[in-house]
Length: 104
Image 1: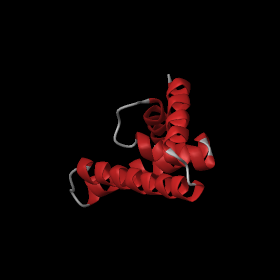
Image 2: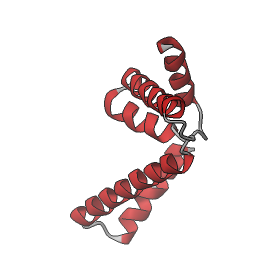
Image 3: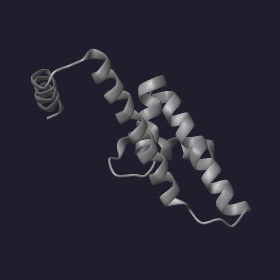
């Protein structure tokens, strides 16, 4: 079972549109891919356990809300950093245009 959950977690890490992908990427950025696979496998195990033992449905909305909350927190951190650096409009435009080219 552990191997299957690990493979499922690894697959989630490779997907773009899965509910748990932001969770996986957040952990992978902080602690590495192996830790992200382990954490996501555990999260899957908890979801399955709750579905089997408590007869709960899969709570897709709660996971999406959690991802959105993480995104809002990240945006607040970026805003604080920008304010602390006291960047002007032209500097911000320069940074974002450079980031756009790196992402494509």
